[in-house]
Image 1 (cartoon, rainbow, N blue to C red):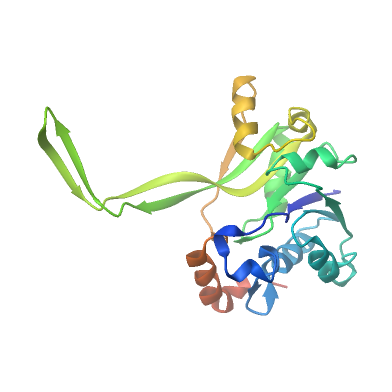
Image 2: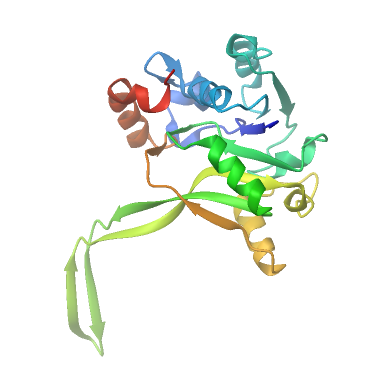
Length: 236
C-alpha cells in the first residue's frame, strides 16, 4: 500500500527557547539523532514511501539536513509557507495529496505503530482520525469547594487526567476541503468546524510511549530516556 506523510516542521519553537535560538525545534538532538530524523526513520520503517515536510522558520537548515531523503530510503519534498498558517493551514498549499494521508508534528517521540494507525483510518474511511493519550495533570494548589461562603470540601494538589491529542493525525481530502486558503487555521479551528458540520473527527486511543518535546521539561525527559528506550523507537 502506498502511504504518504506530511510532517509539520514550520514552527518557531518558542516554548523551547533558548534551545531553539540557533536550531529549529525538529533538529533538536535526542541521543545521536535530531528528533525529526527519529520520526523519518520510523515512517520509512512503517512503509511510508513519500514524506512532505511543511516548513517555514529556518526552513533551509531542515532542507539542508534531510535533502531528498535518499539517506533514509524515502523520498522527501518540501512545502514552504510564506507566512505562518497554523497547524492545518499548510495542508492547503499541497496540491497532490492522496485520498488519505498521515499528518504529524515534527517534534513527537512515540512508539505509535504508524502503519496500523494509517490502515485503521483507511478501513474506517474516517474524515479525520486523532491519535490520543491519557495525560495526568498535577494541580499546583489546594483546591477548595465552597457553597454560600462556607468550605464544603478540600483537595490538596489533586491530580486529574485528560485525553489529549498526540499531534498525530490521519486526514482525508474531505477534511482538507473545509480548510480556508491563505490564512492561519489551526487544529482547534478544524475540530470545531467538523463538529459544527456534523462530521466529527474519530479518536483512536494509544497507551504506549509519547512525548511532545515542545516543553523544556519534556525535552529534558526525552534526552534522559532515549538511550535506554531506543529499541522502542528505532528497531531493525
